[in-house]
Image 1 (cartoon, rainbow, N blue to C red):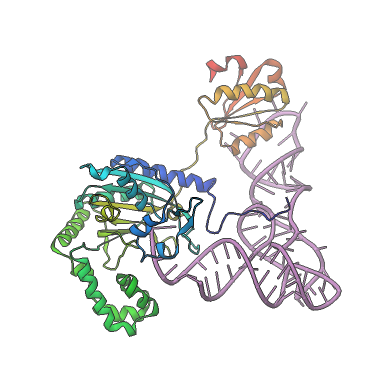
Image 2: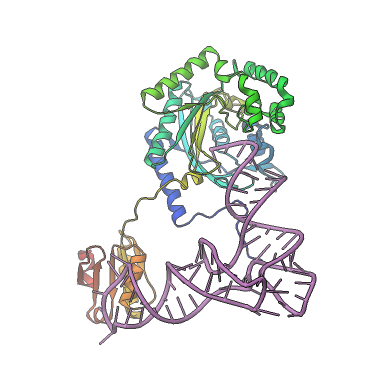
Length: 411
RNA sequence: GUGGAUGUAGCUCAGUCGGUAGAGCACCAGUUUGUGGCACUGGUGGUCGCGGGUUCGAUCCCCGUCGUCCACCCCA
């Protein structure tokens, strides 16, 4: 008492009412589709050893460099709230020795992620992702299938998007391209902006999609990633494009599309929306064939994606609410007492809203509307005297009176 | 981390060229001694983000602080 009111932490939001309904709608839709594609649920801890994220997400990324919720726990362990989902799933995949098993594993997950960033539209410190990870399948068909799955999810949520794809190459072609690009950038270093000069060291490919006009004009002759792929990467990328075209899925090739996390290779993709402000990515993912071995597992090809639930919450339209169940109310205390038993019975099969305050029928009817009940059950003075219930269907407006002790056969 | 806005009732916002505040929505009640989603009437509800300064007096002016929003960076 008298102390300062406690508010949620910066960048953290409570989800209730319409927001939580949207959240559940998105997650249940995504789960249903993921299950149709053969994915099963996996739940991993929110807290992990910090080293996990340093080795997977990569020290060069901003996520690890400056956005982690990292601290020492009471056992003096260096721990971290997960900033993304893939690392923990891969860790679990290896911890459970699934990498020793020569078969495919497909997992879906959803839950909160934490990044210590400055909040803005579509960007929170505590936010939720739904994601899928497929292990053991090297075929580009799997990349294609996962893109189809995301498309299905957005289609069923009625959300429009643009699909962008790129290939990041593999261990055979990416390093060579990287050197080529660094050499090119080195020559025009003095003309590039401050940010780009920093990027040359941290993530040179990012320089390619710098927003400043000066940089863009300097970059017109830069070597392009897609022109420098090895034979396998190139033919897989061509195959992916063909598969998408045959399926009628529109896409844009974006040679500058770079995933923010270090572990990606080959196929990279992003679903963007132009309706949600500056943070336009609503889902992103790609292939990460080397991550399992980086984390000391047996080399296992993998591909996955994550979608930002809060970002698509602004885009989904909730289905019309339907009236459901019963609202129970009385004009007098004794009636409420009887309704407690009625509620107990009905709750075995129906949604029930029981009002404990005695008040007029009119007032109860209003409350019943607000509760979105399909029917109201009411006990007034007459019903109390006759041991009956007055029941009205709020949609059809039909009314009936039944004996309380015949409720089991009447409802 | 940088920059720009902003902070008045549960919500959306007005307002006072400095004299401690209002509307709409929502909520409650009544109009109808027992018939809803409409209408009308009335009511509950705010130390005008917090701290300091100027002033006889600050919600309004000044400084600070915290929060929120938006953009950059980066990302889902």
